[in-house]
Length: 590
Image (cartoon, rainbow, N blue to C red; front, side):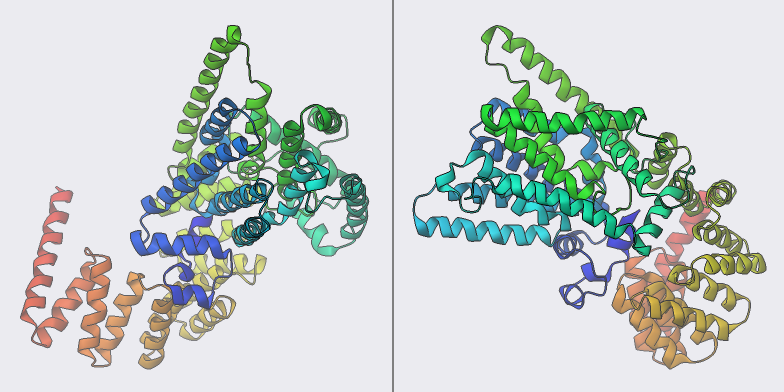
């Protein structure tokens, strides 16, 4: 999952200086929120999940405020915000800490919209200027969370066009402005497709996406458009009936425009325009919400460029705001005689959504449950196979790990990751030559993977080939300078070749990138001890033990160093800890 690269192995979230250095370019607002989590909780997942829940809850309250500002009833506000709160399709954004960007961006965009609405509720020029400035500032903040925030100008233009009298508008002052913009955008989109269809990068992206479907492995613009239509209808169905949700959906490219999913999408598109025309005059709020949903959907629709997936639950987080309000508004009943049944129906809907969300949360419990669900929903999911291979590898269940890795190789022989996992299995089982061949094959398929180069360096080191090992580690570090595992392994190899100063330098670089990495602290202690810097070695071993109190090798070395420098308190404490660990290990064996 992205949590490893975005949080666990991200040096930028460990201090404000690292954040400013920006060694892991990403989304600044999200990283600032992680910096807050790391300062309070370290790498304890509880803190990160707690903040995710806070942002999602805030979005529900902001949704409530937007509904009230649209002059809709409190009943609609309550039901739409509760529906957004418990809808199962939002579990991915809330449960996956790396997807906090979606909830952050939405929060600041809704605040920006509320600020913009306040402009038209004030007659004072100064107050209107303040609200306009705050709206711009909040929009800019949202952009630092996620790029889809660029659509905000379209949102406020839609608001003005639908709900603000022409004489009071700030932007849409010309009556025909919106229709003209729509026609111009449609023409621009057609021209855009003619342009990108000639780009090699776009063709490669589409071919890679189609390989996942198994039934097409070549570029076809018509097939891409069919896939867009199918994914649109598919994700809309998940909003209506949120069953069998997954982090990834793999489905085949439609054979023609007669595919049921494509027909459904083609029917929904004219329905959108018909409803827009009807609601433009009869219900301005419904008209605005329809535009609101469509505008938020566009950035994740793959219409402009192919994203990571054709369909994903997180893509619907922002668009679902409009749909939740539309659902509550469309079903609102003002008649007292049917109000009781209306309330009962909504209670049943919300209860069902809450139970499904609770069940879906269990899917995100750990990697194995997550990828098992992915494979259940999409039996030919390459990511699920590789994910399960990795999860079982971490559990040291190498037989099942190898089984999934081989299935992934059969699914896509061009992917380097299954070879990498099989290489790791052979490496830990001391079949070094087999591991070397698998890592070389993995490198052949992805020559610029730092992980593969790091693994190659480890094998070369164990095979007694330090020159090749050092070269592999250094190449990995050229590709990723903050790769602390590679710097640590480089330090170990340099230590074995008696190049102690270079080894210490490499280990210090590893700790600069990740000050909590225990192997770097331990090996730094070993190197300093060999350099006769016993006080420095003591400090390094203490840091290792501080982060991993059960690290028996660090405790052993610490006791030796403390005794040699005459620190009896440290020596006795280390020996006492070792005795406790050894006693506990003996009890486990019994």
